[in-house]
Image (tube, rainbow, N blue to C red):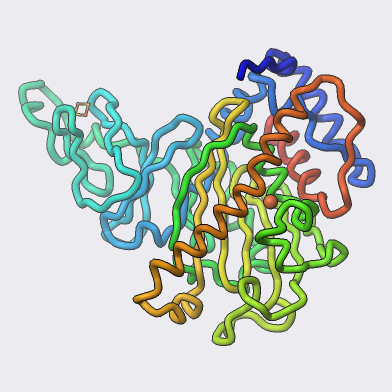
Length: 392
Ligand code: FES
Ligand SMILES: [Fe+2]
């Protein structure tokens, strides 16, 4: 399909001005994210610099690299990276490029090694990124291997999730920025004890922020998710949107019954009262989305692949008491069942998210509005305005 986007070449100043106007509206009069933000190439470049090159980006879960030498590769807005478990139990992250002539070092998505050898000229690094072998480089006078290790990045773990920042000096500490969310809301679930069972990647024809908008509102659930999440029967009146923050947004609601999926396993002694039936949907700005349930969690980390395409890596993790109930012989079939449930949910969302992108391509639109339980979209808009420089 040949598509033409009237917003594509808009100058950055104009897009930022529209963002500022949207962000300054009180929530009572809030409008959708300005459509220009989903289509203007100049704004995509700004997002890349201000968000993906600077902020903490989730790349998966810490238990995906459980043992010394386990590694995970990823890509943050075009920058190839990898994270590897160290001998002391910490995790380090590096640019996935050799220190010789910058060839990509690791091709696999996951793996386990104590030594990383570049296939090009066999320069070899240990898990801490130090160059431990550089064939024939003794022929070069004064070559000091200590100066030619891999380029290290900042890595952090929060509640079982693994984050990387490409910034020389990250603007904030993840633990400090997210402390209110942890202490008041999600800490009680102990997400770090959940075990990861799935990791998938999908590409949709939409702007990455269309997925953020979609995931951070549950208004669409009763209409869009008839085969999946609508089964939790949470009345829209019961949704509560969380406080305004510069670092995250969330909303939550309890389902009426103790049915699973959606409620705590009887052996779960971490949650009490209505929290045993509570779903929390949250977004760690800019790009990490989580649906947290007492008996599983689903997360997505999304990023742009242009203005018109997004790539999302998602995963699912279960608390130990739920996994303990699954007989080993049934595990494969049980997991396949759950994966097909998530595939159906994603298939329910995909055409809607892609339709958001098509509709917002128009420069001629009605006024737009947000429902009271769409507050997270307004919060995200305000975050974008602050971090992307709408207030010079
Ligand atoms: S580019 Fe890696 S060893 Fe030469
Ligand atoms: Fe959805």
